[in-house]
Image (cartoon, rainbow, N blue to C red):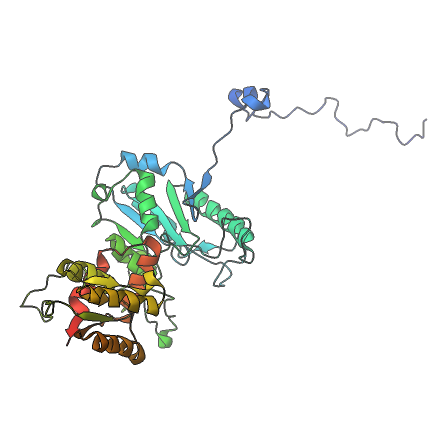
Length: 409
């Protein structure tokens, strides 16, 4: 008898027949098999569930499915359901203000996915519009962890969109430019991407939902003050309805909010003798005189000149163009000596500066009058921002001079 431990021996409990083979169901399709044997250059690739694209240098666009095709199939005008992303659609799972990595997210509320899917089923175009200044689209960025933040953000957004599994487009503004809310740049890109015009959007039936709503907060209820009013202002700028996440998803009542500037107060205001503010009248009282403007940058001084003073034959002297006060005085003197009235279109904010022009008028023996522009500081800041970003001012500035400027004699 062999004692070799490696030699197989029969045992009483060993079956005579080999075990039956398990039947394995094939999961590979004939198409996949055919694709496997093709050369690499000829292989077909499944489309990415979420795609990313940089548009206008500072805007990152993410897309799941084919939202453009879905929108094109909707009856016009199209209803748009737009949402901020952070603290509206999602929140951090860690409870931190900012996500620590790509996996640090959860739904803002358990009802969010179902509500968004319901909107899609009702024919709304679903869009997320978000400010994301902490990420950079440039590899040479000076932002700390800029590219790391970008990669984490893309992975997080891909996970959110894949989980929702709806045709959704995300627009993220990474700069402080025309595309950052409450400015309307991303809305313009949305319309452009979907092939829509203002007329083909049901503005009244559309909505924007966001947490930056200007709410004051309530310490007794441990409700934090909103960091800004940019989401509410964005909705106002594009002329669609606005709700907070609490109002939209949870049905809460509207909370008090504070908006530092109401641009609509300065739009399309018709001034008549029946209004509280008297209609603006500026009369040329002297053939040759100096008109001294006084007011903050953005208060409407230059617009006032081109609208009211230039048609009356006044020449303009402006230090932004001439660079120094001495040059302004020289040019103004020449105009007066040529028998032409002059407007000094500078801020002329302090007594010493105004005294220089009063002295010049006395020296040239011509009358001098002052027009004081008293537009609120927030409106001036708004106008300066618009001018810096566009090179011009939109209609929200045009009535500054009509409502705020008053001739002083």
